[in-house]
Amino acid sequence: MPDLTQTDLTPEIQDQLELFQKGTQHVKLLRAAMAGKGIHAFNRERRLDLVDTYRTEMPKHSVVKFVPASGAATRMFGKMYTWVGAPPANRKEINKFFKEITRFAFFEEWARCAEANGIDTYEGGLDSKVKWLKLLLNGDLGYAKMPKGLIPFHFSEKLETPVEAHLNEALLYGNGVGGPEVHFTINKNFEPQFQAMVDTFNAGLTNQEVRATYSYQDSKTDTIAVQTNGDPLTDESGQFVMRPGGHGALIHNLNKIEADVVFIKNVDNTGHPRLMSDTVRSKELIGGTLLDIRRELIALNKQVSKGLVDAVTIDQVRDKWNLRVPRDYLKLKEYLRRPVRVCGMVKNEGEPGGGPFWCLDKFTGESLQIIEQSQVDTSQMRQEMILNSATHFNPVDLVCSIRDLDGNKIDLLEFVNHDQYFISEKSVADQKIKALEWPGLWNGAMANWITVFVEVPSSTFNPVKELEDLLRPAHLAG
Image (cartoon, rainbow, N blue to C red; front, side):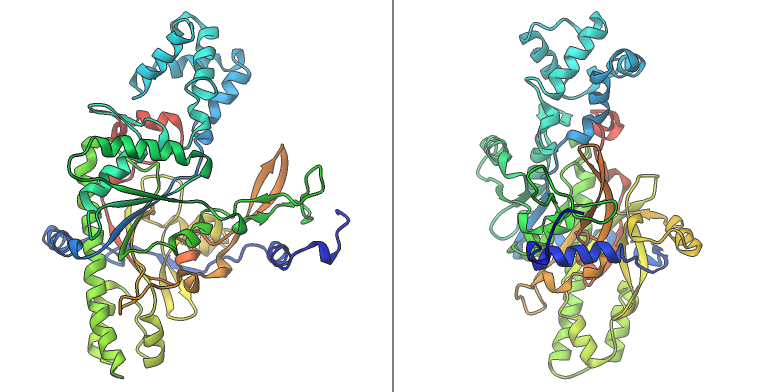
């Protein structure tokens, strides 16, 4: 173990090392949330009513789209780094990949780049293909070094990046008080490129624009890395190795947003523009659901503020929204302080990631939560069975109310379940380490929110984790 004394360790790092010793604190799954049993699958008439609610009420509210967009595209191109490192050994995969490359939205840009660099057509053989790949990874195109949001994903009348897609979405369903705004959490080094893309987008609009704001993951939320034996990892100079604390750290960024309604969606979850109508209608649906719930909670809160507890009203809210609203006056008063979120859920079609579950809750007995596999003790057969019984999947499609029922800004940090941190295994310079990640933004960071799940169409969930995902039908013109 490094020669460290207690004085070398800040209180924050000492606390983190204690969390490593405790290990991941698993949640207790009670059952999967399903359609009609924790997930609202509205009929057509109800959907239209909620969409109308949103369209009618939205202009009275300030609306922000919150888009986590700091991630680099390195993972998208991971296989290609392997190919370039050993071309003969990967000849078959490389040849298979190049049979499809004309279907990528950015192919013509890639071809122009190759021509400008005097590189032969990729049909010339393995060496030419490798040169094309190097252009894509680290050359003049250099997509692998860029944030995902800046890479052209789609082509309709022109190339479209995820940044432009999110700006366009904001125009279509986020034009509330003060106009449409998109807040991107980004790597600060790329802010000029993000802003240049926003400026170009707005230059193509008439009599309106989308305001873009930015924030960065606070380095104060970084966590210490430890070796597999639990000792702190240090670099060559003897300094502790610190790592970003996962997307849960973004609760601090979200906490600084000033808006009535906040939509949250990952930067890479954008389909081809031809699917935009599905996306807009889905956001209006969950937005209308949020406003409808909030209206009923405001009415309940007014009764509570007068010292009244109406059991009939409480039961109506409980039954209608699958909320475990406390009947005890003091607990009810405390419960109504919480922020509210409505989470879109798609049917599980085999994508990796979290899902909706009923979980044990110390305050309400049970509550609806979005749970990742890493939060579950799968060594317990019953827990693994519940995990595998999920019928729906979390696409990270949320709309939130971050003001209390009197209209005041809520301190979101009060509603984090700090026990839902988890320990993950990572690598640093080929060395296996353990990393501490804070409670996920839509997991433990929102565990104590009022939560409602709504089924949304699968067509609204089109993530891009690997480059070949851009060849799925949802990312192509037709």
